[in-house]
Amino acid sequence: MSTQSPYAPLEPSRPTEPAATPANSPTSSFTWKRPHLLGLEELSPEEILHIFTMAESFQEVSTRSIKKVPALRGRVVVNLFFEESTRTRMSFSLAAQRLSADVLEFAAGKSSVSKGESLRDTVRNIEAMGVDTFVIRHMAAGAPHYITRCTNCNVVNAGDGQHEHPTQGLIDIFTIRERKGRIEGLNVVIVGDIGHSRVARSNIWGLTKLGAKVTLVGPTTLVPRTFEQMGARVGHDLDAALKEADVVNMLRIQRERMTSQVFPSTEEYIRLFGLTRRRLQTTKPDLLIMHPGPVNRGVELASDVADGPNSSILRQVSNGLAIRMAVLFLVNQAGSPAGEGVTA
Ligand code: CP
Image (cartoon, rainbow, N blue to C red; front, side, top):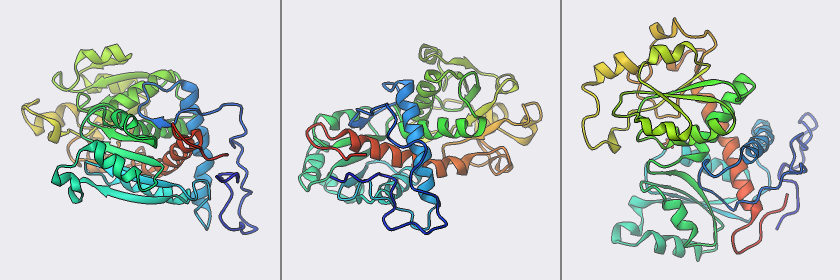
């Protein structure tokens, strides 16, 4: 396994490029030990901050003329997606390629799953080809956890049912910290379909661990009071919540996960919970507006707000690459449950 620094370029840097020794190099005293990333619920604040430190270092790689480092050269990452995705799949794929890993793309609809092959058999057959890391998105909560019991590979959760989407949570919190300079003490409002949202759950776990005050806002049918047990406040008046907000994270209505009518009409939803330019008149002028994507323009976010100066939507996507490079590198560095890891 490579003993080269994960930040070293594949080829010598041009003289004008910065030195390949970031300030946050893995010489710090913290040692990452997890071979899997399954959720933010189980991470400590130190682990979250360590991922951020690593991601900051990897951000520099994307500014180079040759956007590649040899950190995972010779290793194989499998994108095992059982649900649709644009951002997460492409971002994990590009992140793995920037780390010089080989990438296998699995799409359930074009696989032998349609012939009845089980998740366990699918994973074990792909593992038999000599792969190292599974990045899994699945409609069933707990599918990534189950896979850790079927394989000796590293497993990264790319979204499991309504449970967690840990890398999206990390991206959102990393972007907030980048824009606001801190997390502790910030008022973060998450709006919309909280009940069906794995993004909301990962955000709540991560933000509260790092000291933010989280308020959830939406219709009572989509924001049950049970979320208070996670340390968040629950409200149903968006204008009241926005008055004190430093950050607002707007979530999509997930009609594909709904089994009943949860609000009377889209028009009423927009009136009560849509973020419009008019609504922004009573907020802090530097309110950070976020959305994990995909955006339903004109529903949860007015188009001019989504594209406005306070929006960080595309910055979240850009940061996703560095966060996923960091996560792929760290789980491989920790080693597989039965094997050797990469060295820093
Ligand atoms: N935010 C997010 O998970 O987007 P995709 O579904 O496109 O991956």
